[in-house]
Length: 398
Image (cartoon, rainbow, N blue to C red):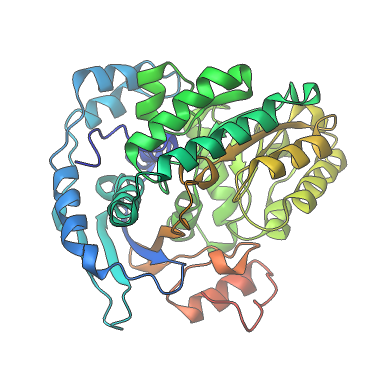
């Protein structure tokens, strides 16, 4: 069984789910799976993926897991009570071969947002682990351990990096559950304060680490259908988040509509209200420079704010970003695939993204066009017009 606990997911699934319970309990959504790697044949693995998904849907939260969640300062008691009754349901998810017959698979998750939001991360973990089991060789872990040691040496080998803080963001694309834990424990043992925590709630609970995360793209995408009007959906999302958490969990996601649109909406009020912002697409150096300048224009000291970088990070890139911004703002780094799936095989670039909410198309238009996922081109064009986003290059795929 690949997923053994419903806590084996990212913290932001719970923080978003709490907002859904309290503010959008009637929302219905649809998610779709995409593998961005070319030429990957996942069809032979469908039966095993389905078997693991069924096992996932048998899980319930244990009393100790609920007690752990109840102890988090930003988790409310009624939400934990709801989780005590919660169970994922196979009727909301379907895994089938793509009708294109090209080796791709379709995973469609459709149903109440409150009852489907916890599928994404464990299902991606299942697809990864089932796929890599077929490729796994005994020497993979020796190579993986060598690479982990090299990354640790980079971070510990320079006294000028004493202030760097990385976090594990690698649950959804990990090589396997057991490898994820081994890497995390090695980092905890050797990095000390340089390891800020993990997005994985299960491992945070098991190993006394800080669970990290706030919001993901799906939250701001859903607000396109749930807010008063499309143009105000981003500010609506930030306002609802602040209403729920009252200044806690204050890292805003910046790339659902691109940086230009984010900065237009992230006015002085939000600059002061939120603790910082997270980068997840486009040039991270340009993003950091623009955000710092934006804070300064809004009479906010950037040194009091946190720049969170989380887009395809490697340890050398972490170091380079830290050195660029270290004396100008607080910085944090969420490292995912490069920590938990770097054993010698090419990692799968797989995602599950929300594509509809309450029957309406939703999308993100990020600063990295290959990250966009929308099956309604007319809506995508309208979204670009409403937020004054430049048309995508002709070669970009959506």
